[in-house]
Amino acid sequence: MVDNGLMMQYFEWYMKSEPALWASLKKDAQKLAKVGVTSLWLPPAYKGAAGVEDTGYGVYDLYDLGEFNQKGTVRTKYGTKKQYIDAIEALHAVGINVYADIVLNHKMGADEVEEVSANEFNDNNRYQMIGEGKTIGAWTKFTFPGRKGKYSDFTWNWTHFDGIDWDQDNLKKSIFKFAGKEWSKEVDEEKGNYDYLMGADIDFENREVYDELVRWAVWYIETTGVDGLRLDAIKHIPASFYRDFLHTVREQTGKELFTVGEYFSGDVGKLLHYLDEIRLEASLFDVPLHYNLYHCSKAGGAYDLRTILNNTLMVREPVKAVTFVDNHDTQPGQSLESFVEDWFKPMAYAIILLRQEGYPCVFYGDYKGIPHDKVKSKKTLLDKLMKLRKTRAYGIQHDYFDDPDCIGWTREGDDEHKDSGLAVVISDGKGGTKRMYVGQKFAGKHFSDAMGNAKYNIKIDEYGCGEFYVNRGDVAVWIQKEPAR
View 1 (tube, rainbow, N blue to C red):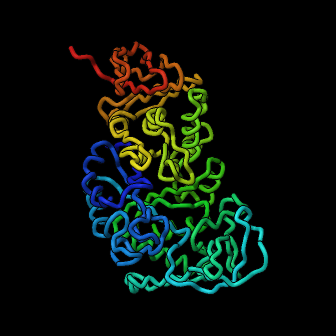
View 2 (view 1 turned 45 degrees about the vertical axis):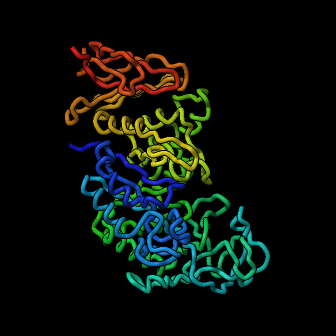
């Protein structure tokens, strides 16, 4: 019997470095498996430029997983290398896969400055050069003195990068492209060319870089035992790099390596184009769906629910869609802040967890809360919906997206999961009743609202249909439950 897959992003941006996340995760493994989590996306596990307070995206040393005294600390924000590997082993012991967050776009916190010829460019038009070329002081020499060549003796210098955003000689912040280098062509067209994002921008057309990153990835996967990858900031990285990289790493490790990329764009056309460019070597987060959920939550009931799945990866390429409500980039205070309003969270999670399309990802900030912004935990709600996904959300799906204020769908269930099958009704307006077909096999059976909102049972008629009710601005999930005799 195969249960529905369910991913959880097990971190949020502002979480504290104590207690160490890896240690807490090891304790949580059994509980997560029980509520239906089948995989975890963990934060970047290697040393960042900001040391123990680095969330992981200011990448310094890919080989330092909390083992060497660098950037003022041995451990990372999340713990030591041993704690990381212990947590992965604990997750594997309860059947949960682990996806590692890898950030290959840039490096930060270099050990030495190099004098490099460079040209300054307009931040809003990366093809527009400003002034004459000059020599700048670039933080591009990475020697990793604390590691002393263990695992890899590769050192990075300016030739391995395209550009940087700081001139140490003149203490000036701007976009500098190194002489003889070109911005990559296979990237997002925002700002003319969105190759450069931050830090020392890695040159993916440099063969030494490609070979070293492949060596590192194979080492990392074999050292940690992770089952898959989450790729950061792929809109800034040539599609051909990840197409070739993933193929090579899978071949060398002999692992399938489920992979999901973060291409943060609400334009589903861009996501489909990227999938085509990488020859479907990875899935993508369904950012267009996230924005639909966000805009609906902000509309206060004025959103046409019939359109909530329009122009989403969930509809256009469901097998490659990793669906989510929010993540560490969309949470309050972040550059891509677009946090779904609290009142709509139950409906939003019902959409990603109880439908047949997509691979849903639950956000730690919703599950555990975000103390930094006084966002309360929704663990009770999410445990209920996640358990419903694990036990009930199976079988043929029937959609009823026929009213701007009230939509629904049903799942007929299957023979492998006892008592599976359900009916979901969502309203962002006045609520009401929706007649839906749940399956002939349920004729004469009784259904109740698993969310506990409707306080009565309904009986499925001889045709397999029921009159399923939902409250105003709420979600109801109806499952078979015979009344006590």
